[in-house]
Amino acid sequence: MDFKNRDIISINDFSKEELLHILKVVKQVETKPKSNLLKGKILAALFFEPSTRTRLSFISAMEQLNGEVIGFSNANTTSIQKGESLWDTIKMTEQYADVIVIRHPLEGSARLAAEAALIPVINGGDGSNQHPTQTILDLYTIQKTKNRLESLHIGFVGDLKYGRTVHSLVIALANFNPTFYFIAPDDLQMPESYLDELFQKKIKYFKTSDLSRFSKELDVLYVTRIQKERFPDPLEYEKFKGIYRIDNDFLKNVKKELKIMHPLPRIDEIDKSVDSTEHAAYFGQAANGIPVRKALLALVLGKIR
Amino acid sequence: MAKKKAKNKAHRKRKEKVRAKKVTQSAPKEEAKRELKIGAIDEGTVIDHIPTDATFKVAEILDLENQKGIVSIATNLQSKSIGKKGIVKVGGKSLTQDEVNKIAIVAPDATVNIIKNYYVKEKIKVKTPEIIDNVVKCSNPVCITNNEQVATKFYVAKKDPLKIKCHYCERSMGKDDIKII
Picture 1 (cartoon, each protein chain N blue to C red):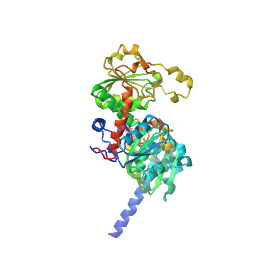
Picture 2 (cartoon, rainbow over the protein chains, first blue to last red; picture 1 turned 90 degrees about the vertical axis):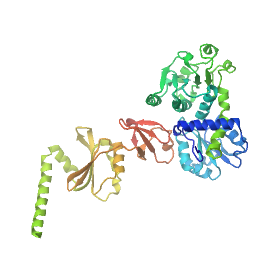
Picture 3 (cartoon, rainbow over the protein chains, first blue to last red; picture 1 turned 180 degrees about the vertical axis):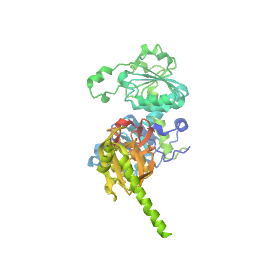
Picture 4 (cartoon, chains in turn blue, brown; picture 1 turned 45 degrees about the vertical axis):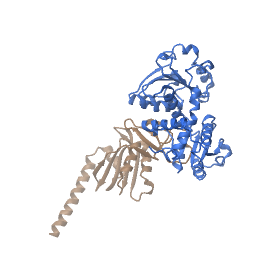
């Protein structure tokens, strides 16, 4: 399998075999790091909107492999301010770098960037559409903590309507015969289009607004933040804020091996007391961002096959 | 021999004239009036049963502004099957399959008739394409295609009822959300 010059834009672009191959490479990079792997290569990190984890982990991954990073984290300091199109910005950037990672508020921007560039482009998040490197690190975390991906019972709780991490992960996991539990108030439930897709793929799923209803069934619980910025009306946000809370009381009625994940940042969905339990997988999940991004950079630059 | 051939030709022409007349005469009064309003064509293409609000979009798809032959466009005509309809007649033009496919997006029930010597020589079945290039506008306001100069592209996910998916923002759109550029 050759990923050289391949763009990483949407999880929908990858087959089950390709995902498994990427996960194998992530493990290889994590267990046997090669420090000079990307020496002489330059990453252009184009962050048109704020990002902490994604940007820093890409920079760290590149530098740990002795590659170099150029770019910006604020579009206001660039020619975009002068009205330069995204297409032109990318055409210019590809002259200076070997690979591009882009985060942009407009959906589909990463796909357009990939069409403009002759060098590989990695999507670091395009609005509320896709964030494939997050999805791959979520898959890797599940595989690492559960020792398998097949036939797991996976719950998703919180904002399932707007949460792009949930949408992409659900599609990726659908390759591995899962049973899903979607836990959210009606107004924040999974969009019908995704449920339709699961139905067509014959994936079993349950919908509920009650967090405790299926707690004993779960192998993994993926918790998401209710995103304040998604609500045009602050009163609406107040209605849902703090609606689900994972704490020690909740953990009394779960499987001993349940793993709790969260893409972070968290507000109050997971009580701090959970951090010290065997269930907490979210900090390890964040740490997996580094080997995942190292592996993807090495793959698209043709340094690992 | 030559005389006989010429005679036969004249006879055939007379017959065709009579046949054409008969068609017009046998049509209902309303139909005849409509024919008169937009005129018949001897050679070319007639696109019928276009939803009335898509008529000018069909004209745009066919680039009729730059056509050299006779072009007739009528909208707001009464139709038993679709309420109000439009008709586009283009003299001297045969449509490509690509043009027919594009018409299918805005007018899925349209009939495309190839006219030769005032008669319907062939009917082309409209067929929704697998990929729709630069015809439909994405309904997602934060899609890159609505913010940067870029041609739209959609994949047809379902044909009936029509459901399409944006190549860029990956949002799905139903028939009611579809707007032509």
